[in-house]
Length: 541
Image 1: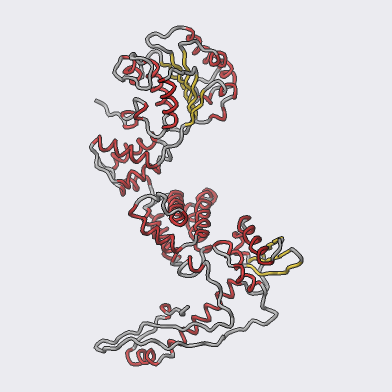
Image 2: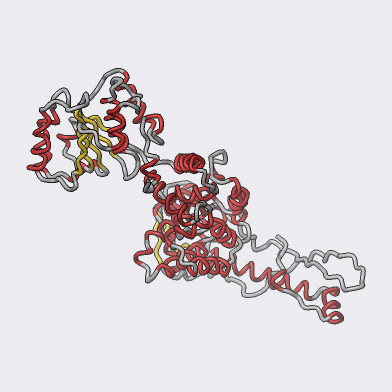
């Protein structure tokens, strides 16, 4: 006996086994049980969501020998013939190949004759939007006033192309795309019935790849069973689909949080070396960012696999909600721009570098987003270092004395000092709006006009929503509405971001100098041939 694919073998035979279209099933069930039957139904939705399946179940419900009801018996001759596709009074038409008016007239000429075997003659016209205008006109009269024994079931993926004269004569049901969870549960039931071992993560990957189509999911499941030699495993499914392992993208986000761009590029190169899809990687990245945002703003929401939740929660604490929104936009925009890139590798790499370029500085993004620059009169922080213990020597770690450093390096003159630094410090902005403001300088303020100048390298921050937030913050700061104008050019004075970087560099230099001057450190260097790892030194904040 030849093999029958899963999509056909597991096609629903009644309303109770149909998955994911409860709103349509409820309406049809009530109509059938109460004998409130319309003469024309229109099912709309994307491919593989159950339009043709619903039409056949409806035909069974109308022609079951046990009577019209929402629960056809499935055992009578009419039900069996409909399931087998050979019921003479179920006329299925592919409108894509029967588009002409003459073909439609010939089809409907037999509508006036009584059914041969069943109670109703059911016309199922698939992809009805493909009919020509004349063909629609040819069927209008029959569609409006059909004989009592005729029912029409129209199906389409593009209802906008159907004339309103046809739409007004039909009961329209919009079939929705299948949720990922519903697909996963259905695939799990099928595999259990088929006695095929599987991994839950593999089913989730298949469900996402199906993009809401149950038929596509079943076709992919057939393919994965063959690919895995009778097993459905996560690694095999990812290889088959060219999908990206979510753990690798989690590592990329963790590297982003640590400002480790080299690690991010290494992960990207590894994915590309395995011929994985750049578009799929950015799609999966956007989904991970969505789950991170849910944990930040709606912690009780379902965010997917529990195995990844702990890492996602850690990322949710490290990033600000505003930056997650910006990162999500960068990911989906980068995916949309892939066809414009020289190649997929360049498109993926540039998107990753864009994420790094717009990421807030500092080790902890959440703290960095609300931290204000140190006042110029504040003392610089002290520094500390973990002291090594020489072999054979029992030494108790000692704390370096707290040291106060005077400001050193180039001093800004009164002419160079911009009032924008003080204004920026008082605004208390966060996220991407803060990034926009701290890379600007105030050129002039006249009346209600505030003119800023933005570094050209950051012109991607000139987004309407960010400018609106900055304008509102400035209006609140000055106590009256203002008009904000931002030009892209190199500022004449130091921006708050540059000044902050200079201050951090000065603090780092002084911290290194303090540790190098410490007697214990000098002794370790001179007597034990030790070396000072300057990268491990950080000022105490």
